Length: 293
Image (cartoon, rainbow, N blue to C red; front, side, top):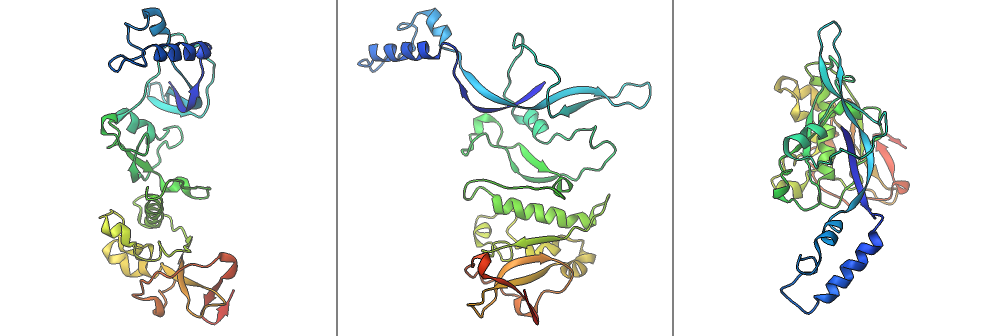
């Protein structure tokens, strides 16, 4: 099974002729309010059938295939995924399907058993699938969750793109929290340091917008230590350290950067949730006690 991503429409060989027929039929019935240009009374059956086809330009993401992963004589078939195609197939007999519901969930959250064989895979939900900006319930994708594996992001370059108020900052918080929680994972415990540059203070401080909309992740990253087991919260709090970015033109340091490094929170930042305007990064310096960078 070949997995395709639809990129755009594609013209068929008869695109120009089809456009001419549509325009002529539309002109013929333009004065009749109750008649459409593609009705059978206006267009003969053969032409109507030919105009019912359309083309889309796709990109091959990969191929799902069955593989026997058994280590003995007993078959052990699993669905696997390859990031290419091993052969070119004619389109005769092939069918195109638009996945949704459980099938879409299986594709979106698929983990290849050949890569993750006998490996514990932490799965963290970050949101739900949408085919477009508008959440159309009839498409049956509103309840399809998207899960990420935090360890897949380690040592990699990752970027988040999206329109305003679509969840970029909230997703970043969830990822930061998930990586922080790896230190308490039941299997393959890891302590990963994270450095967050936050020019607008949306991570170092409480997000008032998320709190007002009853978001599932309204807390500031500085409070990520609260996700630790109760007995370890005090020690985890010492792993979250905030540093201020201050401008040479300003005497007031700004809570613009959060740093996940051992050490207590500075006394002058405890309980301070103010959001101050940011500066350009080429006009700021790190201000540590007794040192300037």
